[in-house]
Length: 201
Image 1 (cartoon, rainbow, N blue to C red):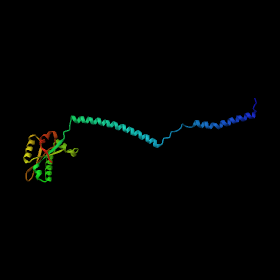
Image 2: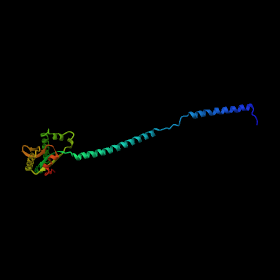
Image 3: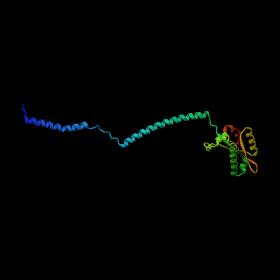
Image 4: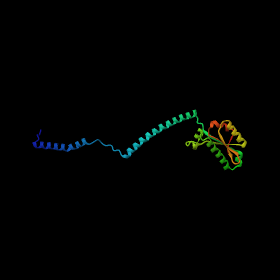
């Protein structure tokens, strides 16, 4: 075996040290580098956020709609058990005058009778309900007709006997009964008095 001279050994040792010195920074850099970063762009974040909001909103809407259906069913059952009795005012005109007077004059007779009946019973609880600001846009008025003066006065007597408050409008100075208007009533209380009369057309 050939022995190395001291110079050759020193040279080899120096090469090893230099090589180690060269590799060391790269090894240290690899160890010190942080974990790879995941970069999220704003559009990606916004899309994911919107998807989350849409999903939550859809779930809320489905729950609300289901609840509304249940509530509506419950309300229908209550309405069936306690139906609302419509408050109505009946106005009755004379057919013989409708056929002979101008249309505007007959409309005026109905208006006069209706207002007079409302004002005459303005403190009545049902009248107050009928004219309540919350309901005034949905008034119920039924306009009917009778053949002539005799039928109108007979109707007035029938209403008096039944305890139905009303106003017979008299056109002055001729003193002609032209129209009857009741005060507002729940329909169930008064409809039977008018069931044989025709709608005014």
